[in-house]
Image (cartoon, rainbow over all chains, first blue to last red; front, top):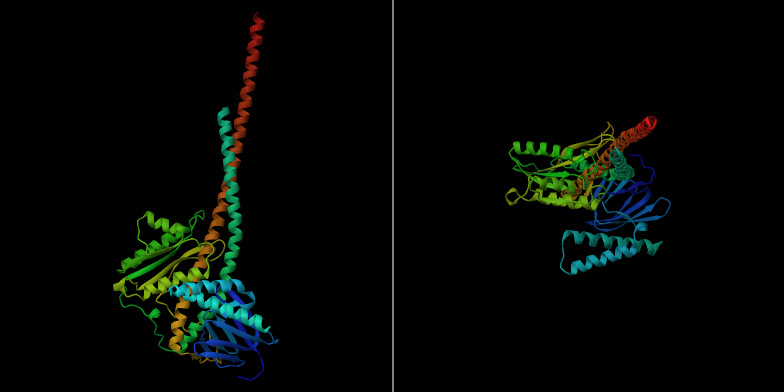
Length: 139
Length: 303
């Protein structure tokens, strides 16, 4: 493969559609093993993500932050796809709503409700709150 | 005669009131079906990326062994997921689904399997209840605008059932009856096997110089597979829900359009009949008056 400086092609896909796509210099995500930074021409990679905020450093120097509650990151031939049914762009998160859901989930957890649904909504809300905070803090 | 004229007019009035309703429903369905189609096409990238991931996994590990892909030697119980609508007024939509479902059930029973039913949609639930057919679980209230959370819930129930051994009430196979939206004019009910999954290798055609990327898996291929498989099942169910919802609305639009057309025809013929009756009444009145006048003239002439 010829080494050029072509940027990464990134696609963020949720169950409701393609929520972001564009060129990026770097993608930073958290897999079950820890944080991973993907640069241009990364070797083919497939990772399982944990609920977190994924950062995409775009070619024009901006940052996109995406809240995920799990999902996958796959890299091949300079294409990165971020796959998560409930992925949300940080800019589109209603922080108050996310915090409310987080509180609700926490209350349920404290009451001993450890059903998968509660856990999922807890993870989703906490990832969204983190992503929103991250986006607000550093912009 | 006068009463029949009034009756005709009354009927025409009631038909035109019904026509207004069906016309409105047709327009509503027409606008909703566009939205449903958009939702269905928007979900395509997700399914496409997942398919790519699964086929990458399949090419990576030659023996793709996973509980969700393992076939049982002699399946004894099968689940049938039937996707119907919550409301009627959509022509033969639900009866087509039930017909296909019944055929599938007969086939499964021929193979010596016991059938467990899962039903989505109020109409389907009503149908099963009326026939006193048992249902393992039902869902309702989202047939024309499903969300991914609905698909998530249904898929998780089905996966759990599939992973439960037969002796404890689990199923060995899961089939889904949904309606595929071919176009605005054709929607065909279909049966697909949902579980055990059939993984098709190399969905993307590879050219001569293309090489299959050797993926690096994190944490490892087996764990990744464990994580991908349930998500894949959810995306299948999601696809079925979206297709069915678009089909429901398209059938509704068509059914309401023909209802409106019928109402128009009926109004036309009722108007004709009413006019005829009115004309007959007038003619009769004239005849009576003329008859009365000539009778009077005759009697005065005799005087």
